[in-house]
Image 1 (cartoon, rainbow, N blue to C red):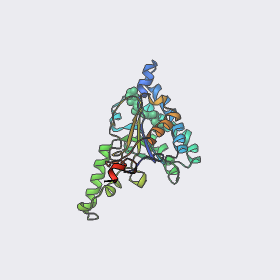
Image 2 (image 1 turned 90 degrees about the vertical axis):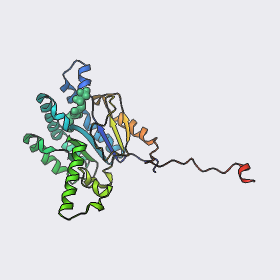
Image 3 (image 1 turned 120 degrees about the vertical axis):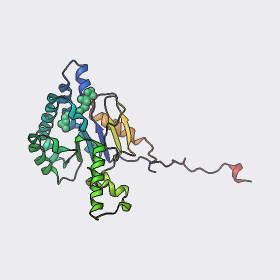
Image 4 (image 1 turned 30 degrees about the vertical axis):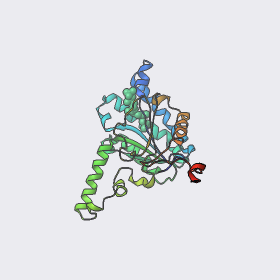
Length: 254
Ligand code: FPP
């Protein structure tokens, strides 16, 4: 049991509602993605300022591959643009950039930009910024199970020794160590779903669902979410006992 007293170490955000944001303004959906992408920088810097140690942003799910080619192509262009435009600022702030998900599915043109940026920022020890791209939690858990089974078959491990902590290391963000578990998940756009995002790592996370769409999400919204998290009582399945007080007279004088 742990009452929340400090900034969430790991915040994960489902950046949802770009399409609806644009459509409500009679713009094409991609307009929402463009505005959404432009929000990321300030949120990363605000997370850092607030003392968040790891920030994971859900940028593209395994299911998003079903979207029209034109929309996907805009998303990849925005990712490339973000990397080119923000690398220096991320480096200045000591941000380490990581990717989780099946990035082998990305076009080689995207990888040509992405891989060197990730590599150049990989030694940084500040905020651990992760983009979940071509990501699905069930797929991630299956891959981890396969890798674990392989290690058992090759006698490096034995099935009975499998522990939660040991298994976590096989997951895509296992290298984050104690930061891998998510403390706070935020989802924008008024949807109340998890959408296959960090299912294992969010087992005990606190959730905040906001009505506003991602392109309207500002640093102050992140601050408010953290403040609201700080008021929560995280019991991890335990109980919170009321504060101790001296027993009333009649109970003690018998
Ligand atoms: C969900 O909105 C958002 C996405 C599928 C993509 C998120 C991408 C960005 C914020 C920009 C590009 C990313 C980077 C890393 C620079 P939606 O399109 O599903 O909205 P809807 O539910 O209203 O249709």
